[in-house]
Length: 109
Image (tube, rainbow, N blue to C red; front, side):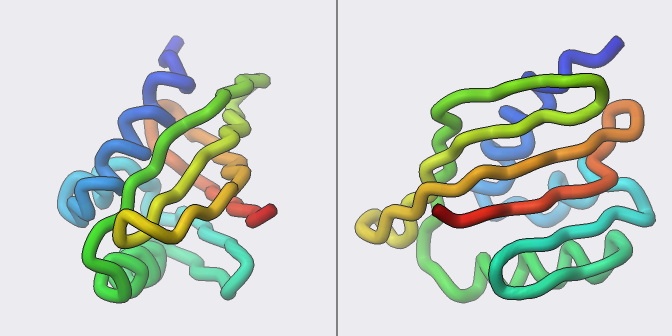
């Protein structure tokens, strides 16, 4: 069995590095992304949504504060630091198929 908390932590590191190639390896072909600004369905659309986020900031740093695992899902309380100054507190609910992300739902708050 995969260590889903570790996979989630790897995802946050890859996201913080704005590494689209490695990010592509993290998602299933049918992945779904939903956050407070919209949604995307399918790996290509999810990667485009992430690229748009990356292009909108100089730096983005995701720090996991706590991770909770149940079945094939990880809920992560994270701190997102944009451009080194703007802090967002977010909860990501990440569902996995094997070692790939099939769904990521992000809630700001």
